[in-house]
Image 1 (tube, rainbow, N blue to C red):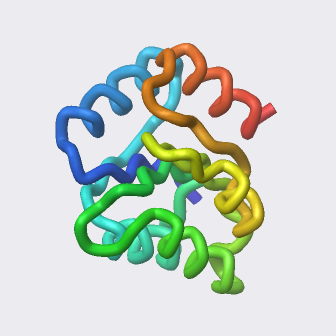
Image 2: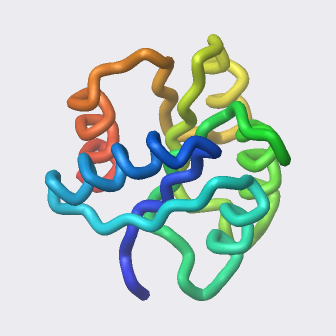
Amino acid sequence: MVEYILVVDDKSSIRRLFAEVLANAGYESKQVGRGDECLRYALSIYKPSLILLDNSMPDICGLDVLRLLKKDEFAKNIPVIMISGEEIEEQAKKQGAHDVLIKPFDIYELIDKVRTVFA
């Protein structure tokens, strides 16, 4: 299995920033802009090692994507770090999120949380 981090955000500028930051920290990533694309990758044989999942997306919110991931036998063990501009930490952790980043956050905080997953 190829190890990579799946970045899920509807804003292409955020996806590009995360991809660059992750690459500079030594991680490979793929980026998608929709919740259904996240589910497609997570449920494939090329599932990611970690998902960075924005909550606010137009097709399906991140918390709903998280709920669907955690219900699936194949994808339920993929760690998910939720990203949101709203206080969703308690709800996200109840649904199985590994961690939560509340916007705005320092990019070093992102890398620290990613490293914690792989430690």
